[in-house]
Image (cartoon, rainbow, N blue to C red; front, side, top):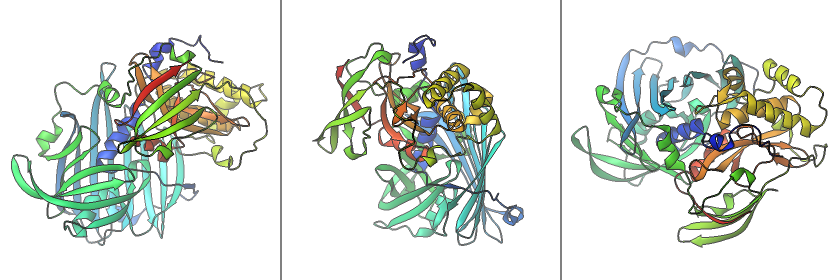
Length: 509
């Protein structure tokens, strides 16, 4: 049952917006549409690479770009390309500032990547920071494998993925583009690795036309390129020598070349997180009162480009799909789900992956294991363990508009939004032997009178049961609409919906 005594539910529903998820999604989408590759664990750490100690003395490029959202300054990027006798070193950084709860929160991404003379990847180091939370990733290419080490809050994970000579680092993409040969009509398929979140991108680039645009007060004739990843797209403007001077994606998100002083200068009023909330908010005409009590919801998702990607399970069913111009309207019925054990036997196939440790869900970490044992002490059945973990995570983490990088990070910081709650729950639950996955979608907020993007876990008890440690719900209400499930590779598919989808409420029970 829903635990109705666990705090001010309406206030908490105003804080469910996934700041970290949407912020990083928006940041990366204007550079490259992204999708994570599948990965497997590897116990061999990256070697101490010799290329890091090589000399790269010749600066061939030093570029600054400002990042803007609907005309207001959001941040900046800087990329410096060095050339040496063994190849290239690219040092890049990006900083984004937003205001949350009256305080300016800074998110930064920095990296060094190393390439051979023919632009093959040798390795990289990256550091991601958000509101004091840090994640460091090191990678070395050996043969056709990329060996990575991911460190967050003192916990270290190792991972290996396939990585052939045709895969390029995102930080090196501009250099790669400059070597492609720019000609209107040319099309390229580039496998691109996004270092900060360990992502391989099947990226398509088409050179659409030449046009004149004004940059830094000077009119230039440049190439207009369209980048595509599945149904996600972005436009970039590139000079004849391959320099990217402008990028645009989503609605109102843009980066453009600037001098250093202009790029570093922020507006007097820093953009509030509420700007992104407003951008992502899905506001139906009909309001929903006391959403945590909703047992059944009929609605229509509008402006869906591909109706076949809508998930159906024991909680939600697709009733109809109707084409409306270029898009589809999808009518659905969603029900709340009572937490109860259907079976103690793990009958579904491929459940092993829902018990494995990942860099975000460190279920094998000694601190996580110890805490899980303490929380579930004396309990023997799956349901009782899951409910105790759900209540503990809800009570333990402060609801703050910042997300952490991993379960251990959340355990130590004692704060975060839905992603932090879900990662910590999943780690504790897997440590207790319960198959657990993280799903993401939308849930209704009375504060905003609309649906916000959100993440929550599901546990397997003969069938998948949804819980919500962020809202303290043991029985998720029917306004929880699942759109994707899985790790980052799946959750970033929310970009198919953000700023595009609409909702019509048909019936609320």
